[in-house]
Image (cartoon, rainbow, N blue to C red; front, side, top):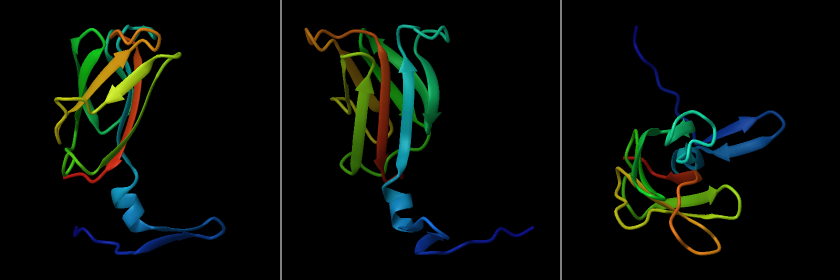
Length: 129
């Protein structure tokens, strides 16, 4: 059986409008996950939940870890990241050590800026390699 191609510049829904396919290729979420560093959900420390294009997570020290995308980004400068953490704590993504093939994450307490293990959420969009 031969494989076929569908080529389109836009996709149109009968009532909801259209979307440019370039948005789907370069602007949609391409890497995201919820990471349970402290084992709050009983899936084990550093368990991945609801991940897309994340093959693994490594705990590198308290509050710090590395998410490994299944497919790498095309460069280190064309990514947009939205991050979050539970409660009123903070999460920073793409800190020193991030590359096209790994996302470095750091979680800190909002009140003291001390690094601590917590549930991390991150969402990245950009171009894949």
